[in-house]
Length: 214
Image (cartoon, rainbow, N blue to C red; front, side, top):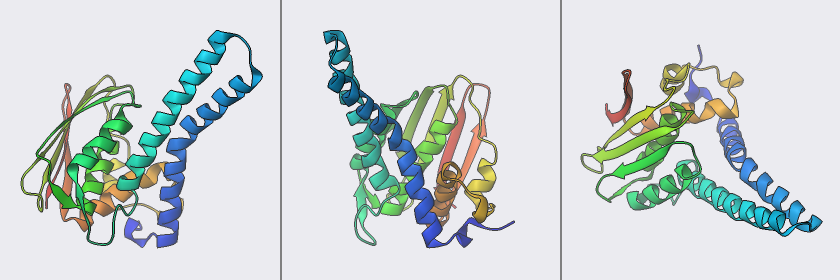
């Protein structure tokens, strides 16, 4: 079994770009559909529907791009810190377009950008555990240089995605990775870079996803 750390920088960049494109193609497509309806004219009700679709889709596309800028992008120069308040803002914007709802608790601090990227990528992992919707109660505790991230996940049809453990630990075949699979793999890479261990506890009522100093 190969390791995710063997993925070339070119392939990693390409896969992450594909992931971002996958996230925004739906709202951008909806904007295009709304514009086509406006161009066709027609009943006032259809015109109002098209404008509402365009507005909502534009907000969603913007939220996803702002989230991706921090979660996957540089978000500043090497060694930069990111305000967790900014992370909260983009996380809440992203989750507003998802089936699950997010609550956020924790003191607002400046944190190393890779830790903030890990925080946001783990939110995507948590969201994948409740594909039919539910709640994610997120909290930050501990010092900024050794934080503990906790995601309390509840919802119908909760499950830990297949192969998640291997993807987070880096036990993958780099040549066979898809844009969908790269996100948890990238999360594992961030966790190792931050010296953080990711674990989860599953019960009938909830899943608790935790990231703490290794």
